[in-house]
Image (cartoon, rainbow, N blue to C red; front, side, top):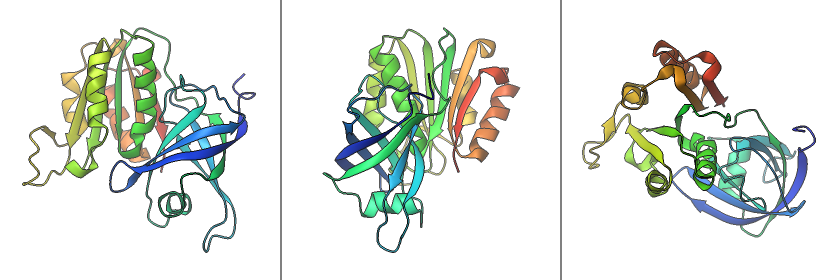
Length: 244
């Protein structure tokens, strides 16, 4: 069933906007086919046409940041990678109104159908699949206990803060934990500082009855998995999407 759901889509770029100095939010309206069905947490392959000095088409994988309930639109959060072929195109060349091609959905990073507590850990553009998951859980009135630890460097790296504070109101039992690792002295930040793992005990009550959903670099994933297992989570209950 998952294999047969993978298709090539043509889509129109409706919105390109900055959410931070290095992350753009891209919203696409599907044209052909005009509808998609996917699981929150999955990703698509974005096909980049030749541009500037790039002579060949390239493809890169990006997590969907919109909810599966929105079947005729897709949203992505794409962080600029220095000299990245795809991110340079998105940040410097992609325009609203263009038509582009995408393929998917792919991936086995999705919500498991249990009643376990859920701890989410992601920073930067890793927020994309977590946003999709939490919006889906909110619209479906989930009563599961959830906590999202978002790690950022400085206050300028925080985004969608209001969205996630609103989810604390719409979800039955959800807490958002933004943590800054290197806040500047004059930024006015009075929240949590350091590394997200230092604050896991604020959320974890029953590690054996907790699932973890992680998105980030291989190094971050490895460190968080090790920490969670030390705290009593089973490796079978830790799910992640690792990207370089």
